[in-house]
Length: 108
Image (cartoon, rainbow, N blue to C red):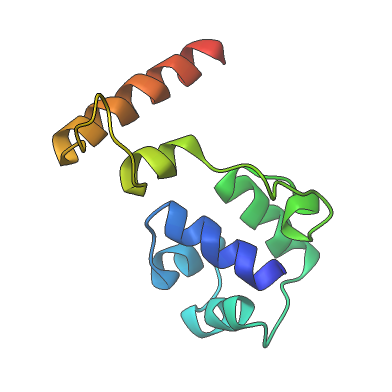
């Protein structure tokens, strides 16, 4: 659902509702209602959301599925995994995040 994807995207970017509302030019209460399903954004706001999170409007509206995909950076930062039987500490996770991000930036 839209509200679930919106919340996931915001939390993935480690942003508060207040921060996202400000970036979108809407009130925090309005934004909160988007995430709780009490209100739906207009087309212009949908476009702003898609630009903010670098995703398509189709994805927001559940027309694109990534059910089997996980975001690698989110997994590196927060997932449960080991490297050579060692659990990475926060500095290891930050280093991996930087490496993966650098590789992705190079491809663009």
